[in-house]
Image (cartoon, rainbow, N blue to C red):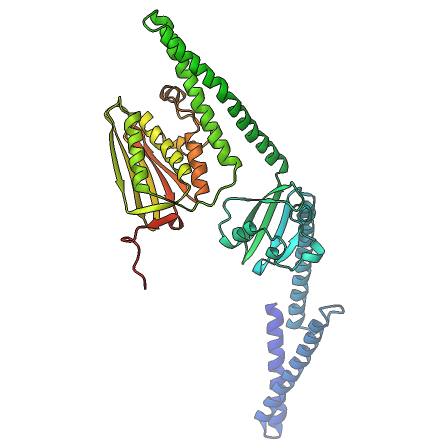
Length: 437
């Protein structure tokens, strides 16, 4: 390339020199040099025009022969065109294979461009989301999926958790999740979970039915065992201890059935409008009384602290959840330990906390505590009489109140379970309300 450049420069200098020498004969050397340079410029303009014409035709053959450096430029352009064509062909093939793979997937995939307009969708999107690909491409997805829950989910921008929707055909159930990518683009993925949902419904109904049917025989057994205890009072200690053990196990079964029924109600019944004003000061005093009664033989120190705000929610569900936390604290706090119940506001949120000075929980167990029947230590749980469902009930109640559970614990130093409620669930007392503007 440099050789061609030098050759063109030398040719221009030669033309200018010849023009200058020719004009020097008549006494006008500068005019000759100018004429020579003008000729060079004209030649360059002609070659530039031919190059532009070739580019304007889309670089189609024939390739112009311009000589010198111009041919090098044209060959480089032509080489880059061939490389670009091969790269484009590779990308096109890759895109076609990706589209073919997405088309045979059982899950729906929808690509949203700016303003959430549908740019592309695979065939399962028609079955799972009720879209018509040819008709709906370019339309905003909120105009096609009219479920208010989907509109709120899309607008919220928090897509960490999937959304469960009813499918376009009853009784289909679809789980949907959005993945942002690129510049203001999103990938919507949906999966048919009708079978899973049906199995879950069967499980819930089975648990509810069995638990309900167990209540009557357990009540009968408990009554007969009380009668036997009275009949054998003052007699063989081995018989009395056996009856006491049976009464203890029947009582544990009754608590388990009650917790299963409570959890089943929370899972199967829709959340009611939680618009009751819950007097948190009175509720804390009642919880402290429960803790005092349950730990009467352990000498626990019970402390309460309450701010001047109330909660908006279902009082019975909240009392059930908070009572479970208090019962856990009493079971796992040794004699002479302390239990502290706190209700306060922090950064606009309401926080109900139960802190104990018990044995604590290892960090690896904390993420699993709200799972049904999860046991940190089976021997400890059996000894304390827990059912393994208390924290699952707490999690369900908090979910129905837009709240979350935060657990902090250190082995040997106790645990703190905190229920965090959003500001929308707080009812401030007049003295704490911000002044009107």
